[in-house]
Length: 144
Image 1 (cartoon, rainbow, N blue to C red):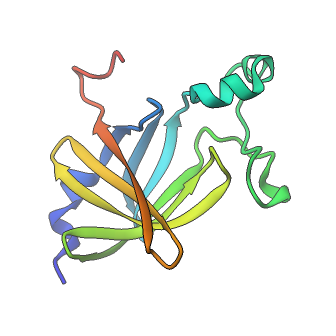
Image 2: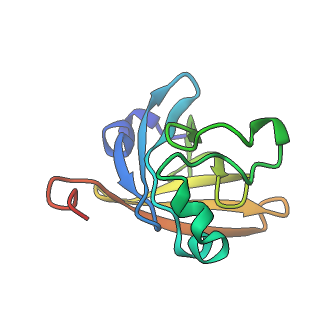
């Protein structure tokens, strides 16, 4: 088992997701936690909900959460990622909450290089995993 401290300076920071939302990853009691710090609504949700999304004016809630008691919580500031402190096979295992479908997935994060990570969520006893690449927010990318 590798030392997770190797990943700390590389994983910590703010990252653009596929939809251009931003997730900030910082050390936490469980290892590393990621919080939504900027929310960009994916086009498929805009297409599906149209004017309802526009009327929210950035006050997005966790409306698709499987737990009805959590559907009113704001998405901005929501912790969506917990990476364990243990590193195995050059990756950090953890859980990923996807507010786009209201599901929590077991998964892992792989460091591609200093400015790129791949987050993968898995189903069916980790037999099927789908990944999404995230890019570090830097001064040169901050104007996206």
